Image (cartoon, rainbow, N blue to C red):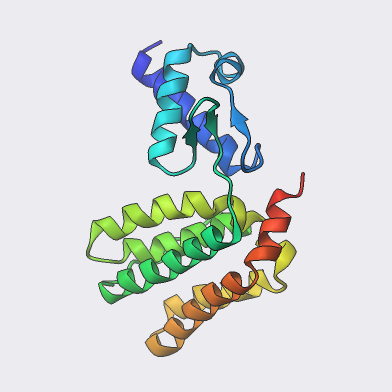
Length: 197
C-alpha cells in the first residue's frame, strides 16, 4: 500500500477515535498499540500523532509520550470565548453561504457544521481553517453539552434559523448568548466530559 495513503488512513482513524470520544481527556496514546490496532507500522502512527498535535487534539509530554490534552474550566471557557470571537470576526466579513441540505446529524456535528458555515461565509479563508480546528477541539465537549444544559437542540435550532434570516442584531445577540451560557456552565460540562461512558 502507498505510504502516503497509509499515513492519511492512520491519521483519519486516530482523529475519528478522538472526535468520537473513544478516549477520555488525559489518556495516553500508545503508538505501538495504535499501530497494532490500525495494522500499520510505527512511522505513520507517529506521523499522525504529530499532525494531531498541530491540530491541538494531541499533546506530547516529556518522558511519557502522547496524550489527549486535559481540559480544565479556564481552558474550556477560553475555547468558548475564542469560538464567539471567531464567529463575530467571520460575520464581520460575511458574504453569505448558500444553504445545503444536511443529513441527520448528532448535536455535536450540527454545532460544528453551523459554526463552520459561519466561517465559510467569510471572505477570509483563514476564518474557515481556524473554525475547523476549533470545531475539532470542541467536538467531544459538544457531545456532552446536553447533559449539562437543557434545551440545546432548540437553542441550536434558533441559531440555524437566525442565520437564514436578516435580523443581524438579534442573530449576533443569540450567538453571544450561546457562548456565554456555555462559559457559565463550563464546570458542569467538564464533569459530563470526564464521566466514563
